[in-house]
Image 1 (cartoon, rainbow, N blue to C red):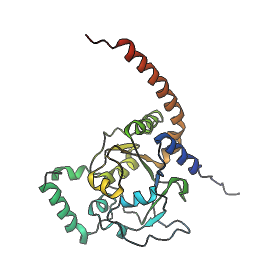
Image 2: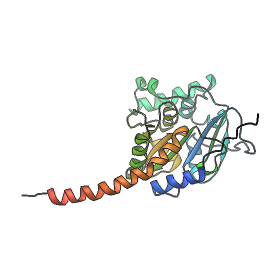
Image 3: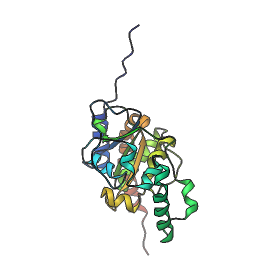
Image 4: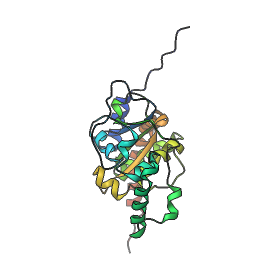
Length: 243
């Protein structure tokens, strides 16, 4: 019996659709947690200060195959990716002590930070349109009014989590989305320094398996918002009274 060939979704078209919805030229980033490196993709050679630094590089158009040690410069990112080793735990504690000491966090918040369920052998970051395999999660950044459309499309597709707006650390949005569905994150200051996203931008992280369903609902959501924009403008003009 001949094997069944499963065709991958049209990721370049999905990338373009997300870019149009967000009104950005920045690439949506596909993140793959995998046991083996993708065929033909060389391991990352170099150093980055944080796990989320790879988001910026992939959003700019680079494809990167990393291993756990590539994330060691960021103890918080190592924690959320479950790549931190016992030898690195003192460094994590130092960072947490600093954050707690300046009033940035309370130690009792730490157990609520999402982590991957297991340590990946490789973490791939790539523009969505160039992903070599179905992504684990897809992350995008955009202005709130545009991010709103993706969040509404995820709700319509039945792919939204029930989590509130996430905050620090930004990188916990990846395991949170993987576990529960689409999440929105306000980001954190470290992420904003390392990725250089704007102060007027938020993140949305989609579970890879939900991507096609969410993209399919975008047209309906965008059309509905266009209609509702006119509806609310007319109501505002008609019902506004100043005395």
